[in-house]
Length: 232
Image 1 (cartoon, rainbow, N blue to C red):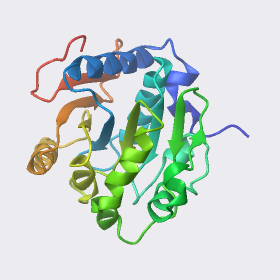
Image 2: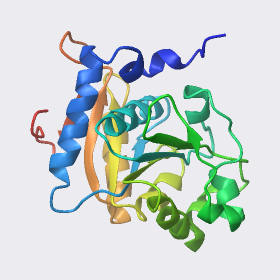
Image 3: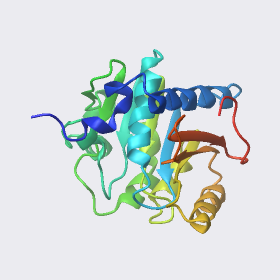
Image 4: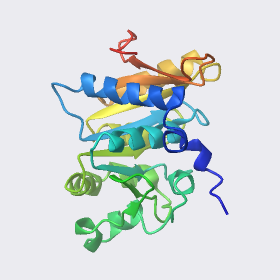
């Protein structure tokens, strides 16, 4: 039976589509934005729920892998994990199991994906205290361990203004990308999300505006200063 979520991976199912090209543009813009400070670990989040962050992240991860980089995609949305569904993978063992088991630090429970070079670390068993788990010193050790197996590690985190998880995790990585949904994300929510990330000194590298109506592209990338990024 076909994976019902496979249609969300448009960079695999229709790599020549305008949307797939827009994801490649996003990848290129991220490369330009990190020339002086390479990104080895990045969080992708949104201001509020249902804004397309997980789909955006999954397709971005695919395009980065298609460029020849080794990518690990980590589901740290421990409230509503979805990456295992998108990739038709197991939810366990995963990230939380790695947090608890020293043996998995050297051999992370990574799963292969349809894209060579991209591997998934699913959420694992859902914990009762996600924020405390992500804030722990062990989290920094897990990030370092994963970086030994990849050129870049990408983390899916819950919406910023819903819970503290994303802000906590953002303080431990090199950059944060904020997903904003056209016609849905409230302006004050986007501003609050930006303020919360700045409060923890996160490096907000930019924002992705998705669900844009138009024939050229449904996704557009903007630099965090609010100016169009190169090629954006």
